[in-house]
Amino acid sequence: MVAMVLGVSHADAKGKRKKKKKKAPALKVSAENAKALSQLKGPFKFGMSKNRVLKILAKQIREKYAEKIKETDDVYQQDKLRRRQKKEISRIKKSFVAFKGKKTGWDVSIIDDEFAHRTDESMMVYWENVGGKDQRRFFFFYDGRLWKMFIALSDKMLKPSQREFSYFQTIMEKRYGMGKVHNEVKRGVEVPTHISWSTSKFRVRAIDKLQFYGNFCLSIADPGTEDTLRELRKSVAPVKKKNKIIEAVISKDDAEDTPDLNDNKGALDGIIGTD
Image 1 (cartoon, rainbow, N blue to C red):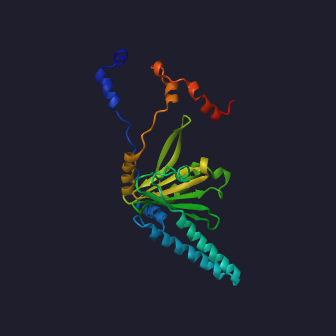
Image 2: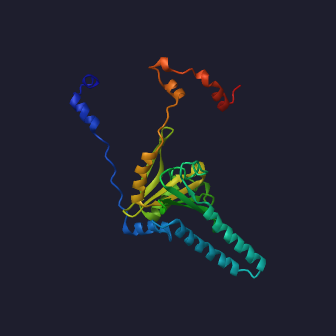
Image 3: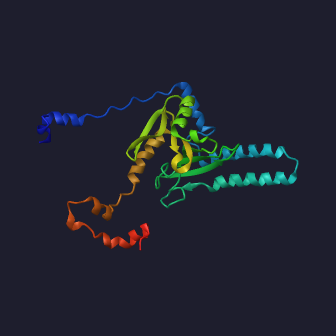
């Protein structure tokens, strides 16, 4: 009926509805830029076990402290540095967590959207505080094997004018070439959230998490495992329960089933602080 009023046939209207917005062509990563992006993995390789990753980190930490110990002849300071070295390695071991369904401190954090529960995923974190760079590197495992690294870069060394996505984008694209910019609508305005580069061997994301966490972030992941986990997470995702109060507010067609909002007045008063 609407199609006829507008002077458009039903067939034409149906055809128009079928039209889909064309996807932007994928940006091809040059061999040079692919090599530079792959270096974000450092000495780590996808498929490594937790123990192998820990062994590499422990070696790096011991080498770092060995240099510091050589710089002083003070036996007390040397012992202090050795204790600090041992504590740093121990901290990494203790950071390991398996996401089995029980809430952890990471469920509301800078990495809360980087993992899921009940999918055989786990994580270990190393705080790299060398030369004032203050960054954290998260190692994500699936079925006990490394599949993704997530690096949180602090903005403490940036000037106020540099604490914005456009600056981060300029630096990243200068280093790694043009990437695909992903946008999200926030408060009615479309804003960029991250840039991505993709090859058959890895996927890299440069993510803006400045507003809530004060960090620019980098993620490098194994494409095959990422695709597998995407489907697996869907299969174990909890069914969202309907909120009867929200349903009452937005529904006007079924007045008989509308609950009395006063039934929940105590809970609402507790949130908004009314007497």
